[in-house]
Length: 94
View 1: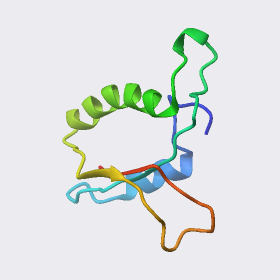
View 2: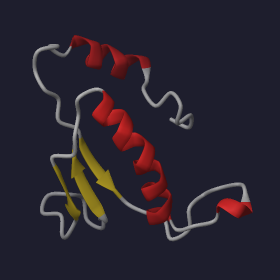
View 3: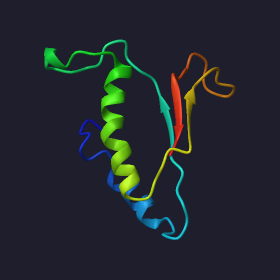
């Protein structure tokens, strides 16, 4: 999914549409940050963590506008059941 403006595939949209409207949805976000964010414009240069912070400033407003909120956010430590070498920097439940 290269287009961030349209992050869902048609199959994923069908799944979302099939969820009961009267039940909450909890989204698990597993985050791994690049050392350097992948921006084509050199003036945008920053770390991956800084880029995610920029993104969060807008996305949290959008989430709140539809009644959502961050339930939990924290540093990821060791994964107990992930494939070997698979690590995450941060986790969020929204």
